[in-house]
Length: 308
Image (cartoon, rainbow, N blue to C red; front, side):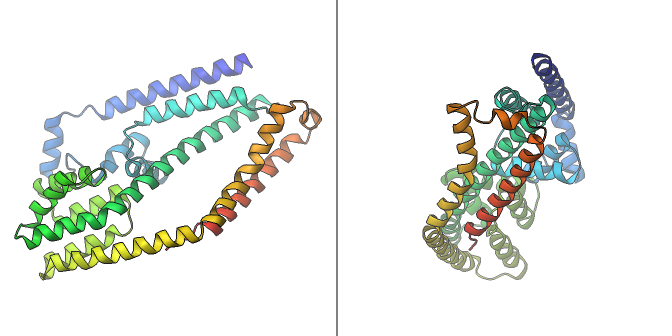
């Protein structure tokens, strides 16, 4: 076990150092070079959601870009090297803790479990950040509407949001103002805001501002009606969540119960599964059980996760 653990720790350390070296190399461009690229139309100093910059550190494949988008929308400042270190550390802990008899199987299970935990953590952070932005969006639209009715132009209204609103709307709209100051149109800047945040209803704001710039009209009235619509939608969503809370809690309980019961039995009576681990078919039975458990949990969570 100690040999496997030492080899695994060495490989994880080598991967971490390689990621740090690659990240440092990719970040080596000077500020002058970034500015020249921006003037040439290649990228902006604040690229839309920094998606290309983060994706370049992780790779160019579709999963790499999806992971970069998850990074960005979760609002975490963790680098790919930090993510690799976190996964490696969790995998080492799980490799020592998991009660599987085969070392290769235990290593594979530890890596899968560690990666799943980190991805779940990022997804939870992204969901909380999107929910927080969604709660702030109607108030943001009200601030912009009042500013437009007072006679201010749209850039000044956006800058007012960046000054007055709390996070995450404050920093996101500050980036919108910076992109507009660097020469992007409001449509492009708001589209980049949508890519950074990932809140679905933000598409309505992008469409409203685009139509207002192309055809004219009372943009303040359009945004005021959009704010009322978002508030009504948010109220309906909260009502649906309240009515489905019991079913959602039952789904979570049924998902956690088998894993918790297995861990509790192993703690209270370690010899309870001794005969099972000695059986040659234990790995097959365990793999089939895990697959069926994951399928059942996915079905339960799909049933109780109602979309409005």
